Length: 224
Image (cartoon, rainbow, N blue to C red; front, side, top):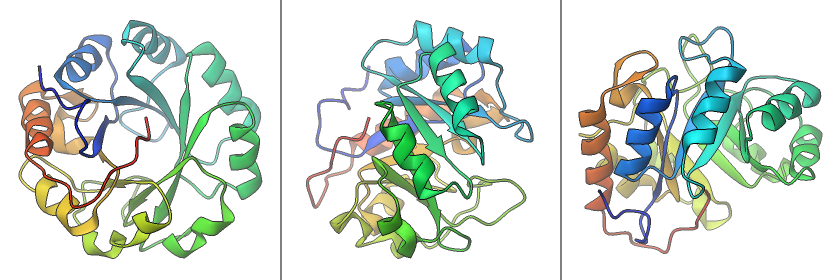
């Protein structure tokens, strides 16, 4: 097992899990968080039953993060309660008011910001988020769409805010990406997949092992 969790290196969220066995294997390798996508247009969309089973099976130190796009407060809270979610990720154009309302429910709230879309990195001060997820925001679907981007654009953001780097990350480039941006955590989905929603455990292991080789230039914050 990779001894990543005890080290001062970026935390790891593996997103788009659709079955419990793969979620447990990713957690055993050293993932700090597992993402379940609640967005009907995504090929990684899960049912409440799937997410509840994944969440129940994971060890308590590994957070299940529900990923939502322009959902209502009531729908997010219903899924959070039914699926025992301790964290939610908002990947659309959600309002600052929604972020604050969810935080008042004792949820860890991650708000996505984009370099090529709205809301942008400069909008961070509008949100009382627990942390931000940064990516380019291009493509057909909300999310990274496996697109690599200029990760240096995120450099300096961490001086003011805790953030997660996402978009186009894979085992061969994650070290370059974190060196360029200095994130507190990284988020990967398609970069460790054999097919949409199905994780390639060997790729996941390679990704986590690559992070374990990183020697940070600054102290990272714990997000998950």
